[in-house]
Image (cartoon, rainbow, N blue to C red; front, side, top):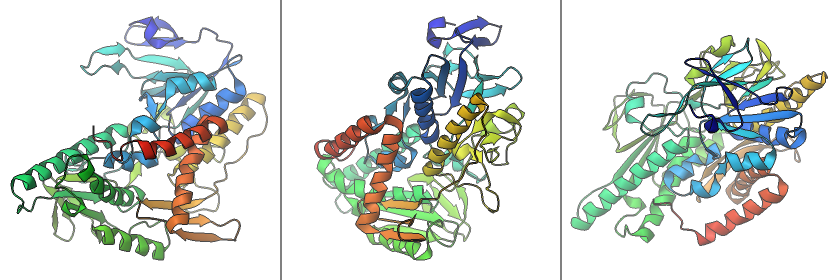
Amino acid sequence: MADTALDNRDVADTGTEARVVLRSPKKIQIVVIGGGAGGLGLVAKLGKMLGRKKFDIILVDRNQTHIWKPLLHEVAAGSLDANLDEVGYRSHAYRWNYRFFDGSLESIDRDARQVIIAPILDESGNEIVGRHRIRYDYLVLAVGSVSNDFGTPGVRENAIYLDDRTQADRFRKRLLNQCLRVSRTMSADPSADARVRVAIVGGGATGVELSAELFNAAKGLAYYGLEVFDESRLDVTLVEAGPRILPALPDYLSEAATEELEAIGVHVMTGRQVTEITDKGIATSDGNFIPADLRVWAAGVKGPDFLQGIGGLETTPGNQLVVTETLQTTRDERIFAIGDCARYIPAGADRPIPPRAQAAHQMAGTAYHNIRALIAGKPLKAFIYQDKGSLVSLSRYSTVGSLMGNLVGGRMAVEGRIARLIYVSLYGMHIVAIHGWLKGVALIAMGRINQVIRPRLKLH
């Protein structure tokens, strides 16, 4: 195994595994696994405030770049070019005084205070970097969540998840191929009733936003060579097991979203549990079968399977790490968990903190404070979740949601242009959090310019 592949790590070969130690063992080493909304914000803050002289901040992620997860439905529809909005971990690490290592967490050796990173393979399956270890003084697990198929037959084989950019890109390619088939069929036979049929399971934010974004993308295809294709050739069915879509929002906002979706052409089916997914479509509990060329599963989330019982830590049946009010894992005070992979039920509450980007950002702030407090021997503070509300974008058609109306008292429902403006500003806040005010504002401005000068759709 090549030493250079591990950047600044010393490697001692121990047979089947390489053991990694610091060249400066006197430094306090803080390792963060997962570069999502919480993990990336945390390492940026740690690197900025602690620096490299006495501390070594390390981020480990299996991807080379970061894309904000709430934007994946736009990547899937082709409305967003992820190459313009993604953040390269290595360049970000250089700017914010931390180090980035690519790799996937395999296990944790709590006795040795080391994480074991799985081998890195190339596209042909050849080993680039072997299994190795990274020492930690403090460890933060921020690996996010993955789709939960609840054991439904055929989901893994016949549906697409939208957990990461790779899956979103795969859906976009299949969508464009199907649109091309329909366009060519209609060019050859204008009387043909050729259609692109998409079935989306799950009436939460991802399913609803993707449904609307597909029609927005279909409108633009005629400008890019598919002259005989438009949104009238798109059949989108949204299937929700519950009595209504967007259960996190008030009833009337859920109804408003349903009316908006149906107005643009989405067929919304509620109270229908999916019993099986085949390569031809989706079977529901009422005996119906929905034919579909493309099938998307967005019906729930869970922690990644590798987290179950990892390092002897307490986990839930849904693979989440159980944490205390300080976000430390219940069995190891040196290990924290934040974001979707953490399960914390505040005192007096009957539900855990929801898996949202805003929760991950807030948890990152508390973890940052408590890690510094542990190092300094000072008291830790409890995590207090401040629910800012929920917003769901129906592409360019509408935006609905509810916010904590701190200025007006209580919860405030918002719709239309005001809601859309707030929704867009949330991404701006994320950009500022990971890049700082100066660069963040500049990137936001560049993003607005790109919307004008760049193509409306990513077709390659």
